[in-house]
Length: 529
Image 1 (cartoon, rainbow, N blue to C red):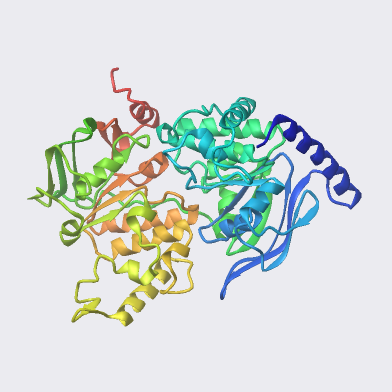
Image 2 (cartoon, rainbow, N blue to C red; image 1 turned 120 degrees about the horizontal axis):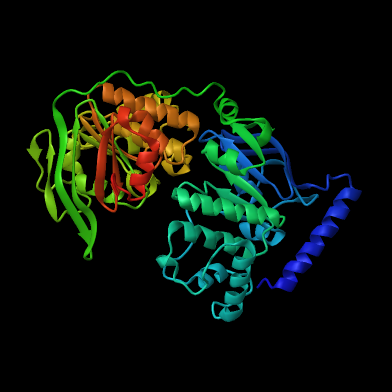
């Protein structure tokens, strides 16, 4: 267990490390260096000759397109992967980690995008779980006191006795940060830390990161959100196709320059043609109500979407967006209300029926709901069509057609993979999202529900997804776009509705939409209130 005396001893060791590093020519302000790191997965070269330097006490962004090699590089720093070539130097000394435990003992910790926490345990139990040389029944009171001291020291506002399952996503993330600090981390990697946070939670996180920086901690910040990177980071390193594209001082650059470095060209804003919508209403929802264990989730919700129209649903995450999508596709029951797809009333919609009727669905959680991670790209792409004649004959799959289809999709959607047989679970998050989009657009849908379609995607990949959604719109598809990214909603939507606590407060045409007005509605402040 880390005590304050132990932490003070570590500070003294840091000072000794700096003196030792200075004696051997190592820059005193550099805490970590990589020299010509290489990592291969079979014939796939994930990292090639990566050399970078991280300063002590800075917030350093690592950016790049999906599949650029960011996660591979971080996994080598944190002991989850071993480099095939090259060297890592930490505090001026060469290190070779073969496990995350070794990296943590050296002072390097990582907060993953998908938290590694157990909801049924308390904060203290989660933080202390797995401590080397400790029994599950060790002195929890001392651990609780130490967690409270760390929380106060860094402004984390974590209550050690609370059950983890009762905490918000933002609070759970702070528990993950406490967990790394409790184990003595001086160098902390944050993987997509704002991907699932509300705007207020993002500001809370930035406050915490500033406090960590002020007390000498070094932060690696992996993100696709360039505005956030600009707001919190000191420097930025960009990877492209597994190679180092450059390192910039944040004060000397801007999001447009960073985006060019990431994708090798200027990012183009989505180009919307004139009004593409016709008069036919493809999807109509009237008076939908849904609840769970007596708690209302959707309240008298009504909407309509015409052919060739994108209706954007704006709102802070957790206000009924997921429940709306699930009700529409029959993944959740409803208490009241009516759903009509091209005039046909759907008493009991279910996913297969919706697909047969020409509806496509991009789910919020690509891992749990969107993909079969142990299966190949080709198998995932035909998951909704494997019963049809195109890919099945006499009960047997038509493998050549599957492969040809997958090769075409990999090429058209710029999926970074070794081929159709590449396991989907081995793709980066953005490339996984491209596979889902390719599968759904293969259906030539008449209606699409797209929930968080670019979550976790880099600017280049998000640009591509936006373009394909607009192409579907121009071909007459009626799209319900659900996103917590207000810029995405404003860029793509023909009309915008704001959801708050399961109700649609107001729907407006894109031309009359005002960011201040939408922001107030997202906070529950209706017009005239």
